[in-house]
Image 1 (cartoon, rainbow, N blue to C red):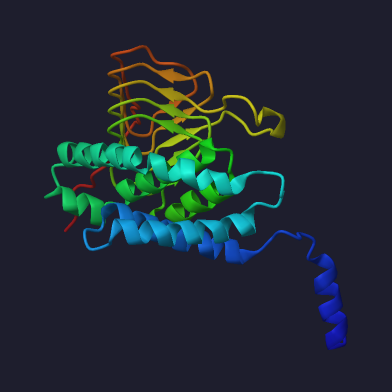
Image 2: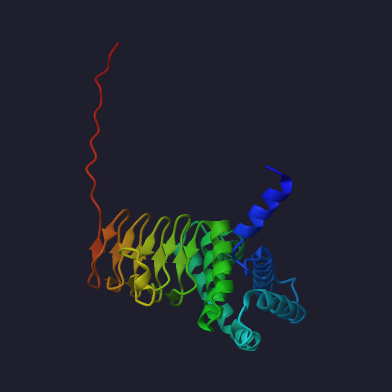
Length: 264
């Protein structure tokens, strides 16, 4: 097969006119700079906000394919919300310090906890998602997913003082609702009962009420599933129905140990 023929065939199969991976790279650059602007003491806020606006304009040019959509107006609304987002994130960091006996300082949480990083990028992405600008927030949370193993859809609604311990393998779906002072551990899934495209506009993921703790590898599924406040969901539990407030749910596998007698 001639070289030109291969090129022609590849070009014919490149069917997505708006698929530019430069957008993904720019979103990652924007996300990093945004995180540093909010948290790093040596990063000047005023100077970086100017840089962020320029970067955001570049992202908009790549991501806004419909010229009739006022994507550029989003930045002004978004930047006004940054102080409030930072306030929420400080509460999340404090919740981690208060929950985890292994944490030595709040600075450690900001710099070394993958769960906190994933929450931070989620909160920064969620506000853009709420503005009706969906692709960029999705790229932001997927960037955090790749770095931390925590997959939070930017459409999820998460309240104050949220704590994710360890983090790896956590999945939180688009329509999940998590209220205040919730703690979850590695491997937890807040997912849908089943996947079908016609369910796109429906609530597919569970609601977690205040002061709930969900331990490692628990799976909670379904848009009508509600975990009542002050409940504890044990590790490896599988739930597809609601749980009343003040409940403890646990999974009890049968474990057998057979010890051979000493053989000389």
